[in-house]
Length: 338
Image (cartoon, rainbow, N blue to C red; front, side, top):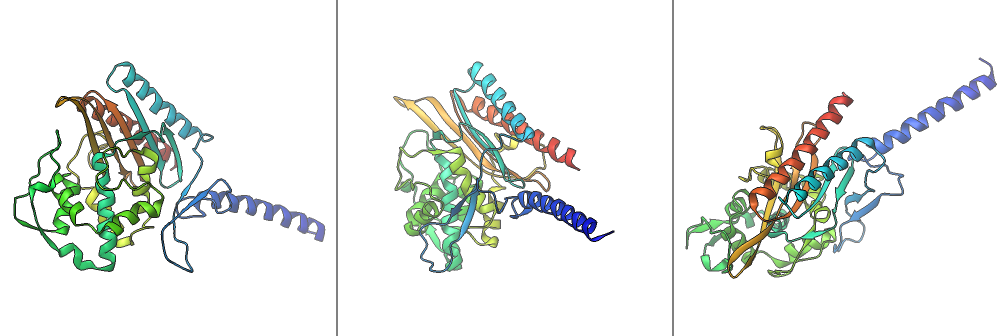
């Protein structure tokens, strides 16, 4: 091969390698599949820190996956389910945010519409305590006596299973709050939490702080998903405490919604929240949300679904249908890729 031929061959080889490298960067350049040169990526950096030399990166915002067939098809499936459920008057409104955590691609429907989070806000409380535990691990062994007076006297507030005047460790209360969604544990923790650590959770990821017991606070599916994303990426808490948080969230006893839409044995780390609307003490409608990570083998994904409906059964069934559609799409995509 003469010099010119070798030069042309080398140029061609470099071009091919460059294209492969560019593709690889888009697929694997960041460990979550983000391109390091993609100008459409918007970094979400931790806010409210006092660091002089570091700028902690929590996650990336990427454009909706509107040019990838698999995800366009999935969004269409989601929309068909929502249209059917609304037409049948089972729900009145649905918002959702789906994110393939491996490919860092997402689709959403009304993902920025806001709903009342209710018990979804137990997750930032968990994160706040674990953040404090990073500095002082003994906080988890601190004991607090349960006083039922901590629970607000509001209609439809589920009773607590805690025993009056009995001492409980912070760790036990966190377990009860997440696994059983126990409101006695939640309000006991809220009365004790260091407000700086709780406020910092919201500040760090740029989400509005609900303040002290605000009844008007609302949040979107996409924004709420950030709590699970920073846990999955271990970008706010340490790896050990992020693992602990998600393991705890995988033990929740709520098996409707997201869990009902996937096969038995599939791990789902999630939290649900129910906000009830009433008139003269009578429930008239509700908002039911279920958000978390579905651990499809080797390809976990995030799904957050928020609904408005007349009844709990209808709302949870709608979430389960959406969850099933997401699981089927992931299964088909990665089974085909093998």
